[in-house]
Amino acid sequence: MSDSQNKKIIIVGGGTAGWMTALLMARAWHAQGWEIGLLESTTVGTVGVGEGSTPALKLFFEKLGIAEAEWMPACNATYKCGIQFDGWSGRPGYESYFHPFASLLDKHSLPLFMQNAQLRVQGLDVDAHPNRFFISKLLAQHNLAPKPAENFPFDIQYGYHFDAGLLGKFLAAKAATMGVKHLIGHITQVRQASDGSIAALQLEDGAELAADFFVDCSGFAGLLIQQTLQTPFHSYQHNLLNDAAVALPSEIGTAIPSATLSTALKNGWSWKIPLTNRFGNGYVYSSAFCSADQAEVELRASLGLLDADIPVKHLKMKVGRVTAHWNKNCLAVGLAQGFIEPLEATALFLVQQTAAIFIEDYERGFFSDKYQAAFNQRINGYFDGTRDYIVTHYKTSARTDTEYWRANIANPQDISATMAELYSSWMNGKDLNAEVARLQLTPYYAAPSWYCIFAGMGIFPSGKKLRKAQAQEDRIDLAALDNFLRRCALNFPDHRQSLSK
Picture: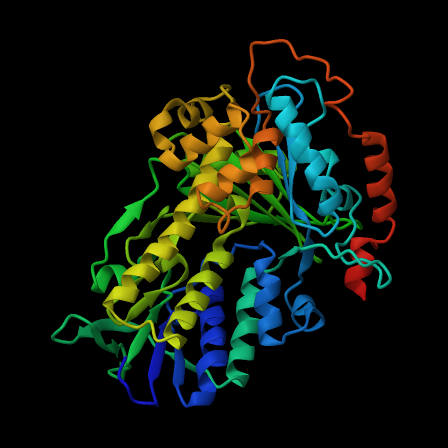
């Protein structure tokens, strides 16, 4: 960017990624006189089916001073305690497990879970299934909201479910109040300067938009970062086979679940996301193993909607990331920078991290080629770290009932060196908490998540009979833990009743 005070930024593309980036930049720079505009095409739509988040989205709204009572009703939003994974593991006793979000109560139950998990790896016959150890699982099991009574001092982290289309519209309206200019036009050509940077955008109506800096939120097309600047794309296709999805809504009953349901199907997995007015359903699959029509039929059949006159939305996915998210005077955010299938609802988390870290680096004066390289390496770490955790779901499944699942577990070279080392550490009974820290995985997925996926999928040494734990080894009173969590859960309200307030 130039050294002038009145800098101009143009964000290309709306949708959730574009408007989130616009809001974060406006919060940081509008008061300094920067002009921030978002250009949206009337002929290019948004994907608009990502309907879940991690707890990071709560921090986004808090940073902007937007209350839940303002945005949640406008987006048919609900609370999310975590993700229930059904049918992912082919091991008896591990057909289902819950990936919880953190809670202050974990200081009581998490050490017990980790202790039992380590003992189980060592061959002791102890209960090490994560479902028994976390309050979030208990709340989701009974359709309770993660919002405790005022006199209960133990907060729980939570994410949200929401209508992605409505959220984009809400953020657009909020951005307008913060000085973001909403521009409408279709780009026909991108004009570059002599150094290869982006100089201006030429529109279909003949207008030209110049700026100091551009943000590419143009979706999978990557109009600026990939098509114009020719930034290389690093594919994850050899790690993650899924490249398509089909989505449709269904009716929701009186009870509103407070968790996402992910169910393994023949050629991928389905999501079921509760909103206040409907369920959002979808099937993420590999087109190498089934057609779009076959995927639609399987999804409809799983929902009991084979004969229902409900239209579906078919999507193609480009899985991977660009090698440089910030190239010359352009920052790519959202699908333009990359995409990892939505198994852990990390899309908006990566949008937030990219925009927030960029703003932070600029404010600290880190605006040169040297720092650009460091920024790109850091964001690549978030993408690759998230990819590794998602790949783990497939590589540890042990399902062999279809060609798709056999292909997912067949090639050990699809696992990164970091993942292979972590897996080996787990199977050899090392302290996984220490290993996650040593391998610097905590910014992406902390140790509790790794304990949950390994233990929840039943990844324990096989081939030897479990040994009964001695008194000095098994010191956990599970009945007391059950009673403690059950009594704690009494402080949390019914999900629908909580939302109605």
